[in-house]
Image 1 (tube, one colour):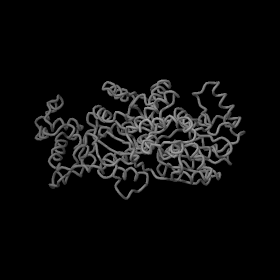
Image 2: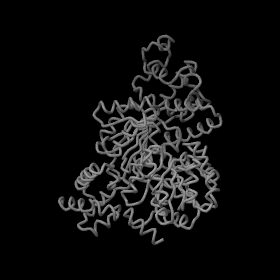
Image 3: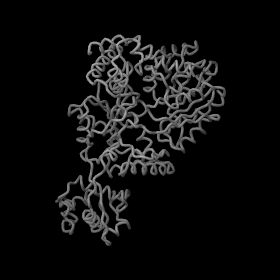
Length: 594
């Protein structure tokens, strides 16, 4: 494995592999198939990129998105590797050039889409060439149990019989046990070495706040982090446009991204974001796997995701470089009903059943009052014996209050309105509203009318959400989400039992607790100066800043303050090629700041 470690040093600037990269590489180098499950940012790509330059022939990498291929190829070229992509974005001349380079054996890594790979003409061409390996990235797309199933991925299993002597490696960051088993079967992997390194991303802080005036909540959060790049995920195209417009109107550099835009429009947004020309992208899940930006510092879920797999993958866009990052979810009971409605519109009843079951798991995560990371990892079958110390419930335990009287008033109001109305109407009654509907149905004469006027609408929303999560109320999705009582109300209404609920969290609390993943002892002023230099170089070369050096590498420079070429090469992330291209300029900047 000395050759693999030498390649790691030469192309990536690191001295040692992370677990289990070295073991995966050894298996592939020995010609074995492999299945790799590693969290986003843990270095899955290295597991096939190193064998690609060490084994004879070209490594064929299946990637689901053209934009993702381009980012990865650009980064590999910066590192001095012979990489190319072959997809529909290329002109005829560019396509001919790539094929000529492929035939000449001048490409170590070729990124292709599954559709292009399965074309008979292209498959026949590959059969005549020496191949190092096949890498199936985002392998969960092959499984109908996965959260991002893509029919075009299913055909990839046919390759295994035609290229029986070539090692296949399937990689993903999100797959429960059922999905893992399905991947192995569908890709027809031959006695694969299986590597599961865990799902934990300790540098990400998970926070859930109750959705109340979400435009304002989102705006305030971002304004508190003016130098940080982030993504805001929304449920619909229309909402991405509304939220991004609100942010722009309030002085935040933001653009929206969804599948309804043209390829050119999406490309412009992504390119500007990669180059740090805009701070925030407000997106649907269309902006999922197409982002390879390592310095995303926060991901906000403006709306509830459909399942934990989607949530895990989308929050995994934050902190790919290992530095402290945050995942914030705005949560409301109304979101649950909207997602249920979307799922119910599906034509496949079995798939609908699966998705509804998955929805229950993300709701359980959002409504947890103990360590969120334990809930998240538990979903993937990974036990965490201790609280993580880096989620909102660990950092600040939810404050409880005696909600017995509020619960009684809420439940009695539902009962007296014959269980025919939704949350907002019941709140209007409790707060003594003079709304047209309250007057129309003569609900202003109920004994509970106005008894809850001392509490805000946001507070009552929180109370009702918790009553639903505790099983005291349900919502009838087929009848306008009307509230229904359950047998669990009896101890509260008839037996004098007390009920304690959590006080609502409506904002992300700032904390002085240690941030996991920080580089110790770095000089923040020098770090900022190096960021400015990086941005200048990136603009000169028309590449994203992180392609020059990542934030973590700059932080190590700002901590170590190297004075020579030798010292600079000892900084994690400074490889030979980048030392030649950029090293002297960064050494000059460090010297000038001394």
